[in-house]
Image (cartoon, rainbow, N blue to C red):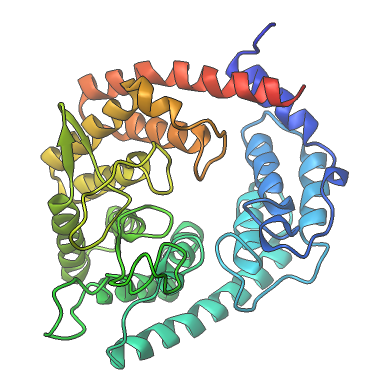
Length: 368
């Protein structure tokens, strides 16, 4: 069997995804056409990025955007970075580099700004009532951290971007004096709802649904001009808490995806969503924002440990971004690029071809 190299495997996969007829309308959230995770919006974004880089076909982009927008676009409770108006706005923002889409993008951006401010108002009201934080309010996938990422990407100087950064600094402030847990402790299970396995809730460290998303967002904001005492203090508080939960076994640094009272922390597989790769990337960004070379070193060493541990890599058979090799590769690639230590950058970079080849091999097999 001949295995394609990564570039050829990607091109072949994109060819298989050229025609929107491969997807069909669905009432299930993750596979609806306007879903970034499993619908036409995500595939449209793939083709946009390919076309902008000169590797793709603009006609294919247009076909997929039409498919993604063929249903009424949600601006309701289920709209977020991965679904509805914000997801499609992200795609059209990037597609403007190809020409066109200005009016459609402006409309979606306005709708996204409106729903963002509605959710900000609800979040501040919750804080004023001294009620605990919920996963769906703040996380990257469904919540305000994801919307903050969109707004900082689309228009970092817009007032709503500043409002979002201010909100994220506020969730770090104590809600009361009579708790032993930090204000970002979640009174729920990993799905965001109360669960008998989590009677005391949990502290979520992951990138998809936990505080590492906030660390990464605040660091990104700081690096792009949102420098304030509140941002710096919030970032420091969150980093100190994650430092308390950093583990080291046989020289390998790692973080658990979540913590619960009086339980031994568990090492997650190397996924972006709950594993060390997503958490380490957030820590690296925080180190860059804080000019903290030790934090950067810990983060990069942790990523290198994941990349070189074959047992860990074998725990990740999937190919996706959230909990598969693509997310692992993307995190590692960005860390290698952003490292300010030439030696660590070279070590990380040396591991990328092997991981990319593994992913390419799976893409090739999946196509048969």
